[in-house]
Structures are given as C-alpha cells and as structure tokens.
Length: 289
Image (cartoon, rainbow, N blue to C red; front, side, top):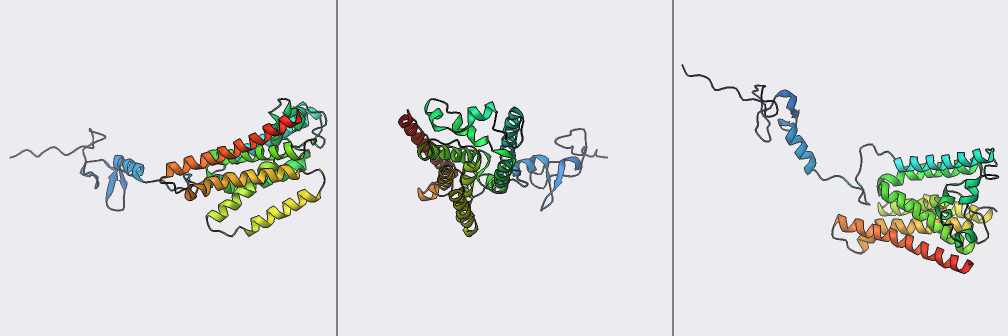
C-alpha cells in the first residue's frame, strides 16, 4: 500500500495542516490567514499587497481622503485661541475685560510701531488674542463651521498654512492702513478661510453665491461698525483667497503634468502670498521708523 502524501501546511503557520488555499496566489493557508474576497478567498499577504496597489482617493486639492475625516487642525486652533484667552483673562482677573492688565495682550497685540521696532511676534500672536468672550465665541464658531469643511479638502498642512498666511495678510494691511491701531482677533484668518471655501466651491462647480453674500455682509459690518479692523479683514480675505487659488487652480492653469508637480505649484503659490505679505510688512516697518 502506497503511503499518502502529507497534507499541505499553512504558509504562515507550518504546524497547521490545511486543505484550503488562497485563490489569488494558490498557496495553502489556514482559515485564520484567509479573508473573504469577491472571488474565493485571499490570504492576508495578498490582501495587504492589494491594498498597497490601490491608489488612494484624493480631493481636488490633492489631499488624501479619509473615511471619517476629523478636523484636528481646526480643533487645535480653537483650543489654542481658547487657551490664550484664558491666559489673558487670568492675568487681568476678568473674563470680560480680559485685556486690561494682561502682559500677554500687551506683548502680542498688533501695534504697527512696535512691529517696526522688531516685535514681529505680534504679526501672528495678535491673531490668537480676543476682546472678551463674545469676540472669542463668534470667531471660534465661524472657524468651526468653515474649518471642518476646508481642512479635509486642502489637507491638514496646507489648511494650516492658508490659515497662517491669512493672518499674515491681515497684519500686512493693518501695517499699511491702520498704523495707530491696536488690532487683535482670529477674524483676519477666518476671512481668509471665507475666501478659501469660496474658491473650493467654484473649483468643484458648486454655487458660491451664499458664501459671496456672507462675505459681503461681513465686509459691510466691518465697514459700518467702529472698532472693527476693516483693513485686517480685507487683507486676510485677499491672502486666503489667493493662497486657495494657487492650490486649486494654478496647477491647472500651468498644466501640471503630475500630482506631485501640482502640489509643488500649490506650495509655491502659498509661499509667494506669504512673501508678498512679508514684503508689505517690511516696507511699512521701514516707513514707520
């Protein structure tokens, strides 16, 4: 009597005889190492290889999409603004008059003559200060609403850069047009995000009229009410809009040949907006000296 050949064993568990095999590579595998597939069943190695070969789905800005996108950067910005407000309130010992005796407010509020004498931290730091809880809540609500829509489209890093470039653009226009003012608040960056989400809507062929109306109403309010930095709002709006245009439209206008070259063009556009804002700031600082 001829001896029967030994049963094949699982390629990942040599001590486990099995009569099953992967329908993709044909190698024997135990039930623990097999996964259901559209046709038959695949071993975990083939499943992993297939996942690596699938091109990730990307947004119109080239950011990789996630199944459950969580706007971590938006939440972090809201938390940072809130923490800075808490520090100023603690230093002033007042929730409403939080800037009255706050050393952080004194050091960070945007005052162009101080920037002209080297206090450059005010250019960005002022965007995290707020005059009272209502000012904070209004800006953080707006940031939450638009930020969680923009961040998944642009991707976290580019979204953060658009936010910071918008702050810088707002500071640049304040340096030129509001030289004797004390300016603070995240609204310059929020206006930049208003411009960015409008560009996104146009890029995906959605009607941007609601955002345009919202921007018009906010600009009118900035123009009408005293104590609101119209220059800062318009500068942030312009910077955020231009940065988003550079990310979403410039690669197409320049006929980028690959996703990588499109990303590089977008980064170059954001950098160009930042450099232009810095150039305006430097020129204004020199004139103030």
